[in-house]
Length: 425
Ligand code: JFZ
Image 1 (cartoon, rainbow, N blue to C red):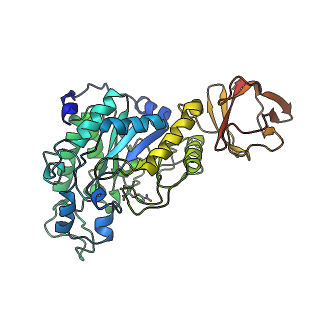
Image 2: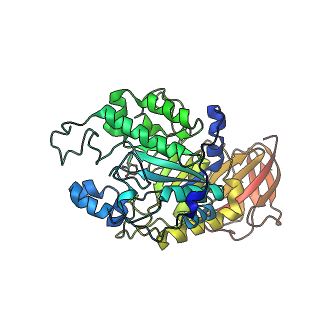
Image 3: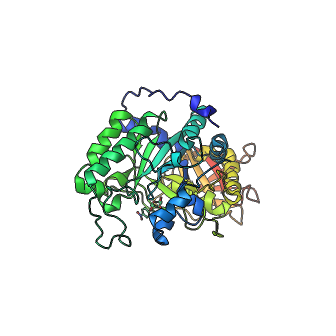
């Protein structure tokens, strides 16, 4: 269990990169795995359960103390992500309930209060490092537990602001936790803030201070936009549309297009483990969603909520494996690509580009075997199906369009990818 902690997490030296350089891996990666795991997983309903069910702190703590993931295997989690085709993982170091799932020296509301002897984040960081997987931390600004956090949930404190809370002291605490995460766990791919809507940092005018603090510890860690509460001209590396795919890209509050990452659950609604959930997106929903996101220039951060024992439910595993099988055949059309060049999507599916390659993701296979790509004026040098590269696909110009003659049946009912090599792309 503790073997993983023998890996050295000596602070890596990172020469600061330009924004363009430090986000390169993110733009190439396209697909990450999100993990919501904490005291709420023990209850197994929803990560907001403490607020939703108005559970008093003392009662909630009984569950928190039961967090004991004896079957947690960090290598298995990294393998699951890797086999699915994900290039990075983002895990909750602390969610809104305030419970840290790592061994925090500055908080006594953490995994150290449970029977579990290890540090899940240390083990995950070691496994990720070994397997060449990037790891980032989701960290909630909102904290329902810390005595200095204001405002508190209104159902507990009708006045909304708890007497005695001290915003600045809370932010100091948050910085101390960030320092632990950014100095004890090796390279941190990103800090994924959340819960900014209670204005904690904005009110104290300390958002930029937190930004600079992170950069000072690890200059190339990416920082999401939820640090800033949609402040115009902020320095965030990427935006975070949630549970939807923005149709025309994502803009910061000043209107500047920025990198973005759509975060999405595999189940219907809950980010944390929900044992009552019966609805799950299908393989087809998920694969097409990844294609959709990438064709619009974004990343997909797909969530799993592991069980309290450290295992991941079959409904998630089978779907991630299906994505992985699709990715093994078609990954060229995903990694390191840029958004579709077509202003209006052709009827058949989606598209991405890379250099002189144009990838067509065919959702609706043409019944007459002829695919019309409207408005493609480039010369098509060659065309091949990624699922069947040996077969020659004939292309023919028809005015502004290209006609491609395809085999009778789709190689993949969910999404078949046709790679066009263009002249003068
Ligand atoms: C937040 C959390 O409250 C939730 O538990 C989960 O961690 C998720 C990833 O993030 O929920 C949000 C945050 C932002 C929006 C909606 C839900 N939003 O911008 O619409």
